[in-house]
Amino acid sequence: MSKKKLVFSGVQPTGNLHLGNYLGALKKFVSLQKDMECIYCVVDLHAITVFQDPIQLNENILETTAGFLASGLDPDKSIIFNQSSVSGHAELAWILNCVSRMGWLNRMTQFKDKAGADKEKASVGLYIYPNLMAADILLYKATHVPVGDDQKQHLELSRDVAQKFNNDYKCKDFFPLPEPLISKNISRVMSLRDGTKKMSKSEESDYSRINLKDSADEIRKKIKKAKSDSEPIPDDIKMLEKKPEALNLLTIYAELSKTDLKKTIAEMSGKDYSLLKAKLTEILIEEIAPVGKEIKKLLNDKQQLKKILLKGSEKANVIAEENLKNIREKVGLI
Ligand code: TYM
Image 1 (tube, protein in one colour):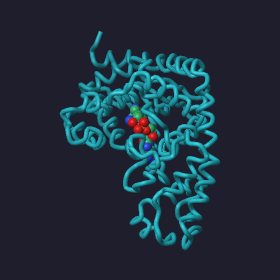
Image 2: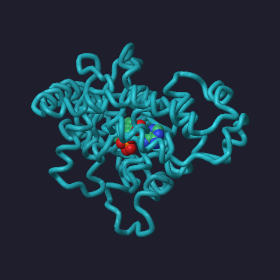
Image 3: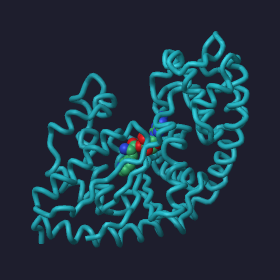
Image 4: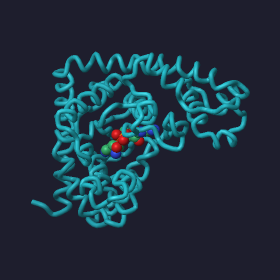
C-alpha cells in the first residue's frame, strides 16, 4: 500500500479567476509543486452542474489553464489537465454516488446557497457535485488538497466517502483520507462591497472583486471604491471584527506584503483608510497586473494551451487507470 504524498486540487472554469482563487488556492498550488507531486485540474464537469454556454465554456477552460500557468504552475513539474479528458472521474463518481449517503449531501451548505429557494429546479448534478469532487481526489489517491475555506465541508465529505468505501469493501487504508490544506492567514478573501460575503465569480458587481485579468487602472478604481470605514484604523482586532470590510482589506494587505495581520494592524492603527488603500493598490498592481498580462499573452496561443492539457491528461490517465483497475476489482466489477 502506497503512503506516498500526493497533492490534488481543482478550479472551475466558470469565468474570471479572482484574488480569492489566487490567494486561497493558486499561490498554494505553486508553492507545493516545489517539493511534492501535484495534480491540478480544470474541473469542467463541475462547471456544467449549472448551465454553461458551450462556446464560453470552451474559452473558459483555456483561460483557467492560462491562469494556472500565469500564476506560476509549471507543466513539467505538475500535471495540469481538464477533468472531462480523463473519463475515470465520471466512472468513479458513479461508484461513489452509490457509497455516499443522501443525508450527507443534504447537509452541504454550498448546495443550499447555489440552489436557492427553489431546490426542485436545481440539477441533479449540482446536488451530487461533492461526490464528483470526492472522485477527483480519490481517483489519484491524493493525500493533500489545497483549497480555500469554502471547500472545507466538501473535503470532509470526501473523507467520509473514502472511509465508508474502505469499510464497506473491507479494504482498510485503500483510499487515504485526504487532508485539506487551508491557509491560516487568509482562508477566505471577502467581497470588496460586503465583507460578510466571500469574493466570488458569481457576485453581480465587478467592483466586489479583483480579477486576475484586471488592468492597473481597474485595480486602482476598485480599491478606491472598496467599502472601508469613516473612522481611523483601530488597533484592536476585536473592533475590526465588527468592520468586516476593513478587516478584509487589512488581511489582504498583510498576505501580499508577507507580514502577519497583527503587525499590519500595529503599523496601520490610527491612520486613515486612504493610506492603507494606497499601499494595497500598489502591492496589488505589482503582484496581480503581471499575472493578468501573462494570461492575455498565453491566450494568444490556444493550440499551445490545448497541447499542455492533452499532455497532462495523458499523464493523469495512466495513474487513474491503474487505480481504477483496483477499484473495479474491490467493488466486484468485471
Ligand atoms: P472554485 O472553482 O469555486 O474555486 C477554486 C479555488 O479557489 C478557492 N476560493 C477562495 N479562496 C479564498 N477566498 C475566496 N473568496 C475564494 N473563492 C474561491 C476555492 O476554495 C478553491 O480552492 N469545488 C471546487 C473545485 C473542485 C475541487 C475538486 C477542489 C472540484 N474538484 C477537488 C479540490 C479538490 C470549486 O468549486 O472551487
